[in-house]
Length: 180
Image (cartoon, rainbow, N blue to C red; front, top):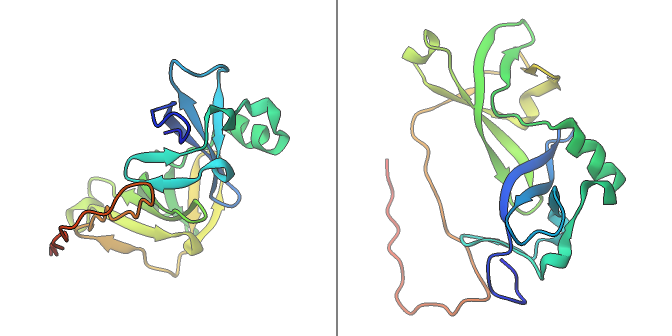
C-alpha cells in the first residue's frame, strides 16, 4: 500500500533472506504497476507493517536487485528455508521446514516450523526450532544442535492485533478469546 495514493502498489512474492543471519532484507514484488522486473522492496523502506500489508511512501521505494550490491548478492542466492531438510548434528532427520515466525520490528526469522516425517509424526506433527539452536545452514540442510530438544507444537495460537496509526480507532472494544 502506498501512502501517496492510498492504493495497492504491488504484492509481495517472496522474501529475500540472508542465510547467514536469517534477516529478511527485502521482498520481491509482483504486479502490473511495476516499472522494473524483478522489483524489490527493502525492509528499510517499509513505513509500517499491518494487517492490510506493508505500507510505503510510494512506488519510488522499489528497487532493482542490481541497484544495491549486497542485496543483489543475497537475492541471487535464492535462499528459501521452506522445504529445507532439518537434521541434528548427529545426522538424525527431524523433518522439513514448512513455515517460519518472524520478529516484525527487525524482520528476523526467530523460529522455524518443521513438519515431522511420517513415522515420527505419530507423536508430534510439528516442531518449533528457535534460531539459537541452528548451527549451520547449507544448500540442502539446516543443522541444529543435538543436545537441545526442539519443542513439539500442539496447537498454534494466532494473533492479528496490529496498531495502525492511519486508521481511526473504533469505539467498540474487541473481545479477546483464548483458545486452548
